[in-house]
Image (cartoon, rainbow, N blue to C red; front, side, top):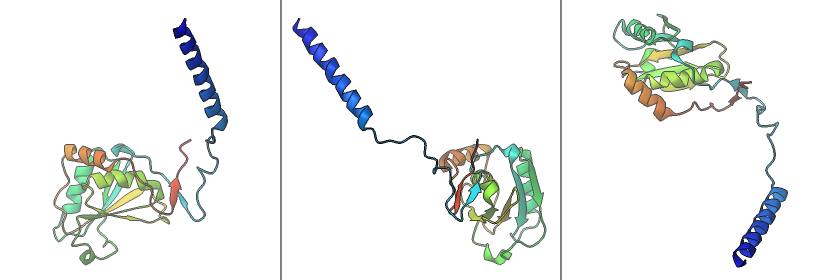
Length: 177
């Protein structure tokens, strides 16, 4: 009999505790402001795409000829949607990027794609975000320290290490709905 009284008291105490917790709960529902951009911010697509959805434009700023074509062929063999080589001089001039592996330039619609491309340079490329950029391509400027693209296994490890794409300053997440 005593055990039934103890169990009954515990049940009543639990019910009171749950009732108080529900009544005093200060958490709100989904915020309508959470999906709004701050003034001056632009919507960015930070969804990590597959290679089949990524277009890259490659510039050769190394002192070796044919490197950009080799890299473009490598990207195409890895199922990228497009890998185009541009022979025009990148801005800044090549002598400004001799000390880097690569520079990755991108805009709001290619935040996730640029994040993926970073993995192909084992996160050793310098990212340059331009919020005014409107195209759907990621520019890659191969720098003086570029040797070769890593293996598929190394890329997969780099993707895992990088985690989910992060939004650049001055952007907010594009509504997926």
